[in-house]
Structure formats: structure tokens, C-alpha cells
Length: 127
Picture 1 (cartoon, rainbow, N blue to C red):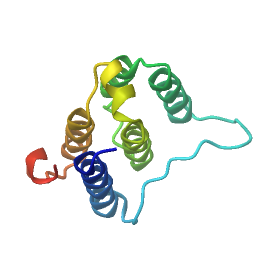
Picture 2 (picture 1 turned 90 degrees about the vertical axis):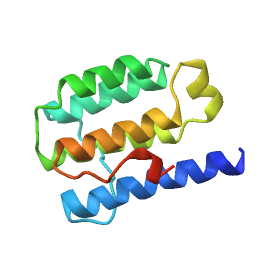
Picture 3 (picture 1 turned 135 degrees about the vertical axis):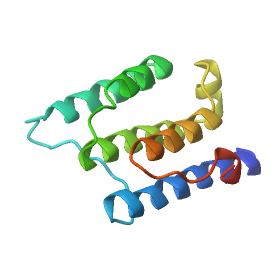
Picture 4 (picture 1 turned 30 degrees about the vertical axis):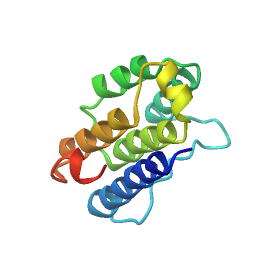
């Protein structure tokens, strides 16, 4: 992985952490599905989005995420931010082969913050 790519990945994680502090009042984002599989509506959505993204349907999964964005709960924010952080863990080859980029991940997290009332001032400051 190139140094620039590593830097971009770290900046995306840092932006997500800042949003977690401002929106959730906690230092990290880590949406975890319950082990007993008694899933809420948001749990089911997260599982569906991750499964789709892992299968290469990243854009389709993001579209579903954004369509559901009327839920303004802290749980929804953490789930959505975890989705973007999951995407950030893919290597560039996987992202490229499925017509997605780190810049889109960054823009998605930035958009998510704005939807929850936090404007971090533009993706170019983070990447």
C-alpha cells in the first residue's frame, strides 16, 4: 500500500473519530451485531449492507444506507459510520474493481456528519 493511501485511510478514521466524539460523546465507532442474533431493524440493515459491500455491491449498499437516513438515532449514526469504516478497510484494488474510491468513503462520512448536524468543513481538509 502506498504511503498516500495509508495516510488517506488514517484521515478517514480520524474524521470518523471526531464525529463520534461530537455526535455520540465517545471516542470510537464500533457497531457490533448482537451474538444472540436477536437483531433490531438497524442490525438487520447493517448486516445486509456489509454483506452487499463484501460481495462488491458497494454503491448499491451505500444507496440503501442513504435511502434509510431519515432515522436520526445515535444507533443509526454509529451503524452508518461503521459501514464507511468497513469500506475503508478494503484494499484499493477491491475498491477500484467495484467502482468506488477512498474519496467517496470520505465524502460519505462527511455527508453523514452533516445529516447529524456536524459540518467538518469539506473533504479536502481531511484528505
